[in-house]
Length: 240
Image 1 (cartoon, rainbow, N blue to C red):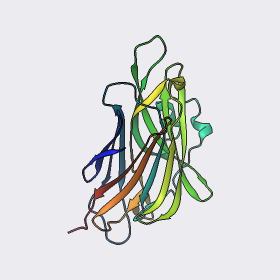
Image 2 (tube, helix red, strand yellow; image 1 turned 60 degrees about the vertical axis):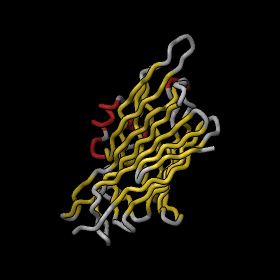
Image 3 (cartoon, rainbow, N blue to C red; image 1 turned 180 degrees about the vertical axis):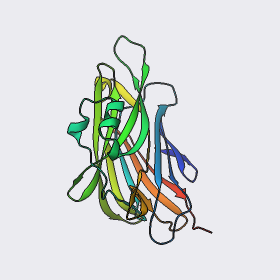
């Protein structure tokens, strides 16, 4: 059974001892009624347990995004998995600086045989990737040093869908962390790069206001079979 506590754009859900909290915000909140304006989409997912034990391993995050937004990668430099292979965070951002569309951080609790649990952290970098079948893609880059230095790369396709309020779907398949001994406890990222095109400022993510809100539906799935579906809204309004 999932128990849920929520506000306008934050939610906490529990199954057994495991809890998941999620927030989503979209800035600015003043958006046009027609047409689109650049926004920054920030998502934060945290995982923990009420008894302090190691949480189950997060397997996937699935996002359905509001159809009143759009992703615009036209003219944006592209980064590839090959360019990012084996890079540290600073090397990745230098190598693919023009394709960087988002940043964040991730943490995981590591439980190795014979060692007390400990936490590892990594900067997250999100790059515009090569299109796939006409759909925009992202490449998320993280980095771990346990049990050995390694770049963690996750390709993410942004698919168009027709699902009521939602017009886009993105699935994040979490990489194996710390040789399989790591359980992700935080995934935080803000996506919102802008650039000039035709004398106008264009965003990688753009949106307009409809119904006083923008909406995201997320599902966190774990390797033990648990899953947490949540619906999150971020308020918006028209210019005065």
